[in-house]
Amino acid sequence: MNFSLNNNLKNISLLVLTLFSFTSFFSKSIAVTVSDAVLASEGSNPVVAVNMWKQLAKSGNVVAQYNLSNYYSKGSGVKKNQQEANRLLKDASRSGLVQAYLDLNKRAISPGNGITLSFNISPSQWLSKQEPKQYTIQLASSRNKKSIKRTYENNNIKDNGGYYHYVRDGVDRYALIYGSYKTVAAANIAIKKLPEKLRKKTPWVRKIKSLQKISK
Image 1 (cartoon, rainbow, N blue to C red):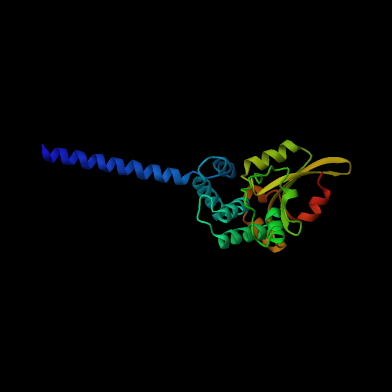
Image 2 (tube, rainbow, N blue to C red):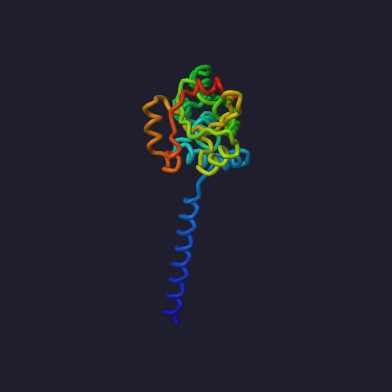
């Protein structure tokens, strides 16, 4: 009887361990979005928000880099570390985030004390928030705004691109753009890494400053 009881306890322990492992794996597999991190930042637990911003920052998300720099600067949800705050702010600035660029110049690479949550940028605002000296990839252009929006939504471009409105020969047109790059060469390399369905649209490199001038 004791042998049977021991076996049952072992089986229960194994089941609990298996369920714990599966739960941990499943939790890690769920991708965190900027919207998730913004909601967490508005909550009462800054540690949760910091962990979400960290995940996004590791993937190169400039919004996360900027907001995480503010947490490190303030010491909210994480040990205060001005050096790390400055590093993240520099990374965001190099990637073309205008607000980070302004902070670097106006505040001697010291981010503000408040947590900025306004960078959950809509696709129509994305172009205006980019550094003019950078380059972007134009993925498509059409007179049909719904078509451009559909391509945007179906290709996981959120937070890394957007679309803009311009007029050519008296006709309203809309263009889909993706990424912000220091050089034309860097943008061309990124084009080669795009999914095949987007490469088929014959994307090309555009100067951000020139697009900001023509966008309505």
